[in-house]
Each structure stands twice: as C-alpha cells, then as structure tokens.
Length: 144
Image (cartoon, rainbow, N blue to C red; front, side, top):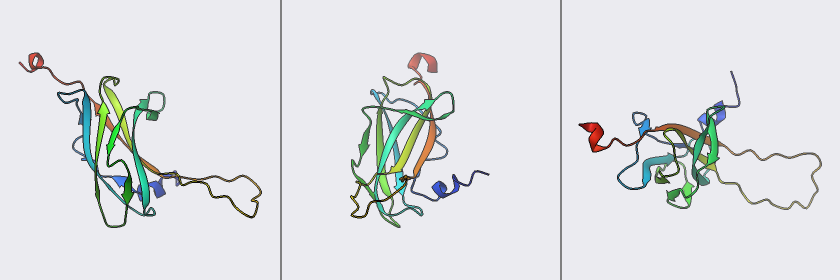
C-alpha cells in the first residue's frame, strides 16, 4: 500500500457527480462542469482548480489546458462550507478521451527567514484530481 496517497484522500476535494463520468460538449464551443469544492482535513485557505489533458503513458494528469474559465476566480475554502464551482473548458482543442479536473492548495509566497536554514527544503502541496471521459456530441443525424 502506498501510504503517501492516504493523506490526499482527506484533503480538500471536489464533489463531482459519480454518475456523470462522461461529459459532452454543449451546443457552444465550451464544456461546462458544475461541481462543489469542500474542505476535508486540509487547512482553510485559498485553493485553485485546473483542467488537464491525460498523460497517455501513465494515465495521470498531464499538460494543463489553456483558456479554462473557473468561477469563482478566487476560491477560499473554510471548514464546514461548500463552495459552488463552475469549470468552463474550450472544446475545440480537446480530443475525445480522459480529461482531468484537479483541486490544489494555492502555493503561499516564500517568506525570507532571518536565520539561514541549512540543507534542502521541500514544500508539499496537496492536489486531488478526478478523471472524466470526454465524448463527442451526437449529431441529429446520429440520433435517427
């Protein structure tokens, strides 16, 4: 068992409908996903949502998708409060297949220390990702 995965399961999370594993483009040129963000055992604060293409070799989030609109633009999560989140992704640059939606802690600005710290330091940020499958929209001709 990989014990590094367990803490992220209790972190902040998006509440995506488990029955809606497939998403299709609407009539416009964008895919819209409505969800809720909630705080688990993570610290309250600012979080960010992003959409990523699938890394075909490893089936993990790969390249970040550009021109994704997230509402609200600044997402602050507090204990016991759900926040509605709308993700709007341009469909013209996507291919059918896996798509990743990720919620992660927003990196905090570095603080300068008065006392020098020796040795390497690492900042760890928690990220929860969810995979959805993008399907092409069925045209009226295909429905007949």
